[in-house]
Image (cartoon, rainbow, N blue to C red; front, side, top):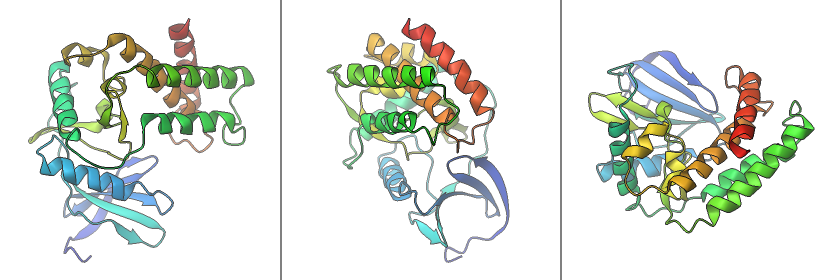
Length: 255
C-alpha cells in the first residue's frame, strides 16, 4: 500500500452498511463501503475539519479516500477501549456539547435532517423493499414520520450541523478521552435531534434543551430506526423481532 502500512490480517469489527476492519500489524481501522455509497468523502471532510478545531473526534490515519475495485476505503486510527462500562451522562453531554460547538464553526454543505426522514418515508412506501411490513403498520409508520417531520421542522429552534446519530455505539471511551466516530450521517437540524439518539439522562446535563421538542425527536428517531429494521436488506441482528417491539413502543408513545 502507498502509505507504507503493513496489513497481513484483518479482524471484522462491524459488518452493517459498511464493513469495518482492524488491520494488523499496523493497527489501523479500515472502513469499506460499496462504490455506490458516496458518503466517504463527506465523512472524511467533516472529521478532518473537526479534528483541526480540537473537537472530540476519532483521528484519520490518512485524509485520502481510496478506491479499490468496486469499493471505497477510508483509514482511521484504531483505539483500544479503556472500559466496558456505560459512559456517565454528564461526561457524555460534555463531549456532545463540545462536538456541537466545533460543528458550528464548520462551513460545509450538508443535508437537512428532513432528508433522512424522507429516506425513511420512501422505504416505508416501497413494498418491494419492505415486503414483511403489514399494511396497518406501514400506514402507522408513514403517518408518524410525516407528522413528526412537520412538527420538528416547524419548531423554530436554531439549526446547526449535527452528528446525526451520536448514540453510544458512536462514542468511544479511549485513553485520549471520549471520541465520536462515524460522521456519514451528519445533517443540519436542532440539537434536540442529536440528543434524541443519546441515552435519556444525557439531556439532563446538556444546557438549553427544549424537552418537548426532544420528546418528539426521540419518537421520530425511533420511527426512522424502526423503518430500517423492515428493509429486506437490513443486516441488523434479529431485525424483525426488534421492528415489532419498536412499533409497539411507538404506538404507546404516540397514544
